[in-house]
Length: 151
Image 1: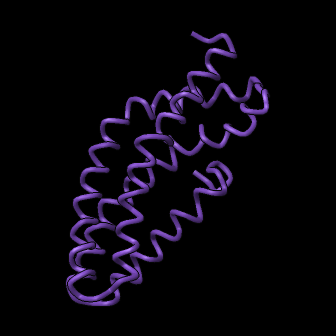
Image 2 (image 1 turned 60 degrees about the horizontal axis):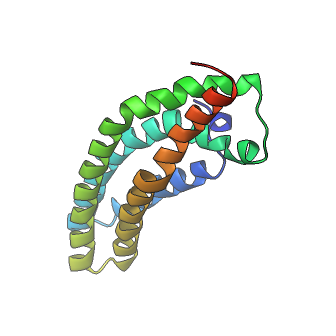
């Protein structure tokens, strides 16, 4: 998957998550160990998001403007795959949040306030994905399928 296949706004966020985790892994102590644990569960999850959640979301502005083209039909399968992968992705969120809570504890105890805020941001982001972004990505596929008259 290339940068062009994923919404521009999503890549900087994932890049930022990777960069901050990399920095946290260099501070040493329990914070570094916990950051590495987060990285190990977060990286495969982000790859799934980039493959199945983000491409449908990229169509939202065009769909909201009333645009529908036959080329959009390719998103139907991607969205359907997201729907099938959703239980796996939600399970990954549970693992990520567990790891992030470990980072939150370690960073709090070791006085790394920037990583405390970072951990809180990841937990909030996971919740937002579950409540808004994943359902929206699935609905995009359903909407395109409906508009293109596919069964």
